[in-house]
Image (cartoon, rainbow, N blue to C red; front, side, top):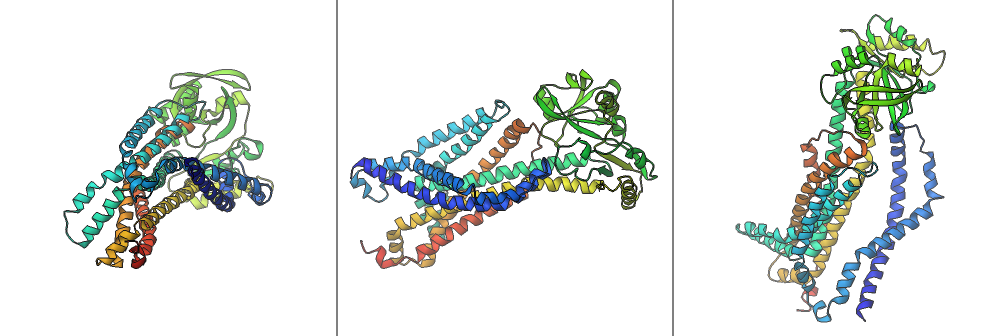
Length: 571
């Protein structure tokens, strides 16, 4: 057989595995998609426009074949690309060298240093790529920085596997059979940087993605929670019945009559009623929300999280000079700041508004500008109200006032849909529940990454057991027990797990910085206050430890059951 035929043989084998994996993966992916459609539909309904999930059944009929074919093609192609390097190595390996056990891994050790240099270069490149801004609103370079970060750490994994053997010398200071087993396990793992480096990389990537997304989501949730607590201060909110579903607001069907303001103000327990109006317009090619309300009333009873200065002063000043408060997202997209002038096309013609302040807002990803209601009505000639924030007097019974508000407003609806009367606590809870449902899908993807890492550990250890059958048989022949063989394989799994978890913690921390400071900022413009959820990180590391031990248990158990006679037959 020629060298070319050897390479083709390996590529065909990889393609066959890819086809099989593509078939299984496509079926599993469609089944998983069917389960997640309801969740995704709920998220779209929460954030944008109400949708149903009844169309999901089409995946089993009209799209099943096409999706399955694409999955098979992708699986085959990716497998063959991944096999190019090993196929070329196999074709160039001389027959005598191929028959020498361990020679392939010995040759790979010579490349560990160079691979480490490449890894360091990729990490430096990731740092440079994180500085430029987005390209046409898309953080392309941020995505490339993420890829370079994970690839760089993956290239450093073989070096860590070999250099990590220094821990073996530290362990070797202790005496006892257990220490000897640790030394043997670490020594063997460090002698196989090529294969073990791939395993460590798989665990590192899975854990890094889990930690990075976890820190990002928890930081985002904390930021939103603080924002809601500081800005949603109305005791009761009166809104259309579908107000919490979708953002296409401002239409007549999703608005309330202005006469309700007098009805609400007539209730003795009500101290103040604000009139909040939210419509969508185009500003310099961007679709943004125009919010109008009584700014002086809002300055007394509530506030906005402004970037600089005092919220009440900015609100009163905006009402006095017919100015605007602009959200952080819109300010960054339009390139404006405090003291700038923004021109907006209104129904009454083009109008230039001074920008009084920039405030943090997470209710829309398109941006928001705030003006006084009197100014809005004079330009848009719109009397409708989106919601009524209601502030109650001190010592008022909330439940009794809500019941009275509902009773009086229902009498004015004329048999139509009753309004939504929601308390401050319920509104905050609903906002955070929508947030949690939105990111629930990410946890499913993290679980898949962990499973892939577990399979990588299992694959590596089983291959190691197959290669070391003679070694295990020799240890058994000179007095080693089956329990000690299990310990040997488990210690090797622990060593690889420690390397993977260490790199995963580093990668997860750096990935979270990229997600929060670069990708999220460039994609949506939101400033997220980064926090470190220590408890959640401990749980993630504990999950990785458990996954490592579970992945190492079955190969260890199988190694301990290998027949001694067959292992020594060729000795």
